[in-house]
Image (cartoon, rainbow, N blue to C red):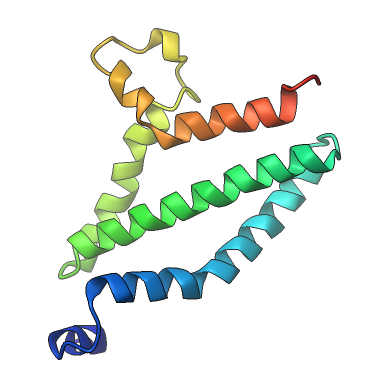
Length: 139
């Protein structure tokens, strides 16, 4: 039995307390590594060095990393007793998000049945916001 299971069984903390503590402990590293990666990517792609554009872009990327981590925690919580299933399901659960984000297929070419799923897709909205931050707003 894992220590976290014993601690939860003993009633030392609730699931919400564990979730909040884990996210708060991961927060500095997640922000630091996301910023480091995005600064390198932003500079290598030759984007304008306007501070406000970079701030919007970095903010969007950090929010996407928070959402992605939450989805990863959700998948791991659902399949807590079977690690192999969690490792298989996690990438497969991302495929519809990627396919319906408008990155590979234009939103106009997606069938009407799948169109509502594009409205709730966080990747679609983040891609659009990044494009607006980099290439829109008077550029």
